[in-house]
Image 1 (cartoon, rainbow, N blue to C red):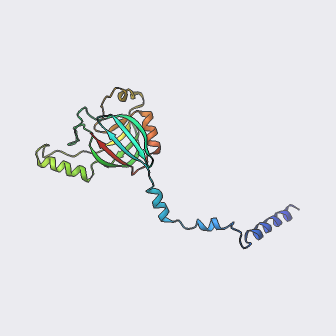
Image 2: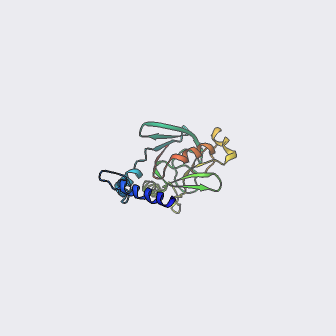
Image 3: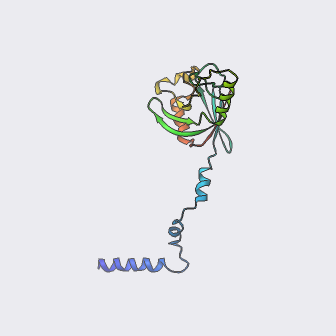
Length: 191
C-alpha cells in the first residue's frame, strides 16, 4: 500500500510539473547561467565613500543618500602635514581606496588603504627633487584604518595620536565600520 501511494505521488508530481504553462522548472533552468553583467553591477553597487578630516578628528561615511555615520578618530602624529616619507608618523593626505580587509593580531579590525598609490608617488618624487626629503628616503606603506586595542579606546576620547601614520577608531566603532564597508570603498584624507 505504501509503495503504491509513493508511486502515485511521484507520477502525479511529474505529470503536473510538465503541463504546458506550468513554470515549476523555469526558475531552475534560469539559474543555470550566471549573468556576469549583473555580478559586475553588484560589485560596483557600493554606495559608500569615506572622508577623513585630520583637523576635526573625524571619519565620516557617506552613501548614495548622503551622510551616513561619523566616527571620532586619531592619527599618527600631532603634525598634521601630509606624509613625506617612511618613519615620519604622519598620516597621508589624498584619495585612496580600501585594498583589503583583514584581522590584525593587535587590534583585529583593519581596512588597508592603497597607499602609496600613483598620486602618493608623484608627491614623494616631487618633494625628493625639491630637496624636502633625503635622497635615500623611502615612501613607506601599510597605511590603514584600524581599531585601537580593546582596552585603549580612551586614546580616541583624549585625541592621543599614537599610530605610525594610520587612522585609528575606537575598537567597538571600528568593528561597526568593518562590518559594512566593502573592499574598494573610496577614502579621502584631508588636513
